[in-house]
Length: 424
Ligand SMILES: [Zn+2]
Image 1 (cartoon, rainbow, N blue to C red):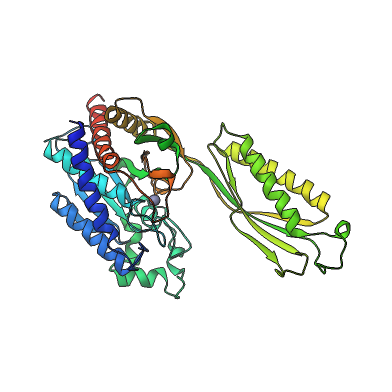
Image 2: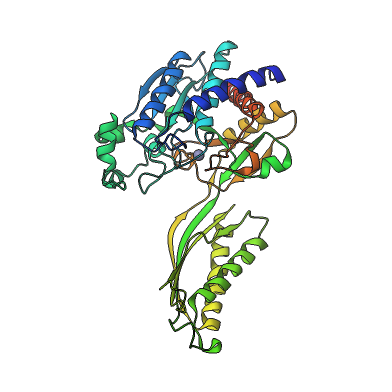
């Protein structure tokens, strides 16, 4: 069935739905849809309407996630279980239209295709349209999937957005139920697994000329704060050899961090200094203090820890040579979240069938809802090629044919799971 015509037809429908969702924004000139806003509500309701039209029973859960469920089509060993399929419908500020939204649309179209083809699955399906993956409005991310997975920390309800509105207040106004969140967690023994289709947000698939790829894991990640203290002085009077310029020390460190990260290609190591602040910040004063952020990610926890240790020892050398005082603090550490073997095999089979060649496996450098869902069940992800690897940007773009391939790939992945069940 995965011929070019079916792929084009599925992709065309996906594009229409993506465009309809993209029209729902807080701003008229750009796409901004944050958690628990009126725009989020409208997008969730639209997704709910589509789910109903596809014949799913729909409800909004206490966290504002739209859930559409399809009962099993035939008995089997997992007849009491559901395959969860989902992604998020929130966006960053001035975001792209495919990030997250594509996963919900593709999930829905795959369910529709399975029904249209009369496939009777030996397990149920629950489609989830999560409202908070990006974590733009509140300091935490993955609120919706954490609730579904039973790993939500209720302390987050007391966090405020920039206008001073707490998550508890926003959730209540939205129609959610802060007091009922704990009861929304799936029971682990009722879940077959979690599948998500998402744009790659990187350039690998485009470079290899493949529309679809199989995610192996979400990278190990840590964030750090580095503070370098030198000595302020008059830009005109302190001779060069007598300076302890914190910004020059920071520059050496940044270049060193890049060199360290470039050395480890095998473990997909990446290290980024994304924020820098120089104090006092005047054109005629030698910088006395510099604050930097550091983000390190790799395919394994060990590779990431090794890289951080190497960066730290390089930083100590810079500190000594430049005669500055350096502090290095770890503010976040997330272990690698490996995809489950059954879900990965199903995605591998589905994507490979549609492409007519073995699908490439790749690491996700970005975090996704799978990070929370991994606490509940095996998870698997299929990546879809996006132009230039650009994301979190209005220039984000996926072709109609690639979206169609994603729908067919997910259909084939679900059928592969059904065959696995039959063989058990
Ligand atoms: Zn996303």
